[in-house]
Image (cartoon, rainbow, N blue to C red; front, side):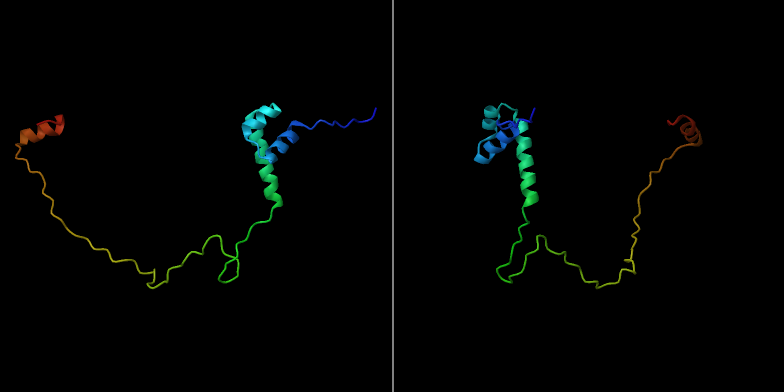
Length: 117
């Protein structure tokens, strides 16, 4: 028995054909009889294979005639001051008032052990 090649296109081939015609995902899924997720997966695979074959597009500047960078180089700041000397730190003294209690020795002793006056 010889191998018979099927003349009927597979579901994947049908989906590819309908997508290339520009049909919507819902139309393709209803026509072929597959889920919408299957159609989305096929769209993804088509996009991936097209990007592998395609060459990257390089934009040419009209002014210079050279390729334009996609991202600009970061501008470096000029080193005007050496970083070896740390900045001068100044401290300011502020007088903070402290609470003053006029407690007797008995009250202090009671507060020490009970936590209350």
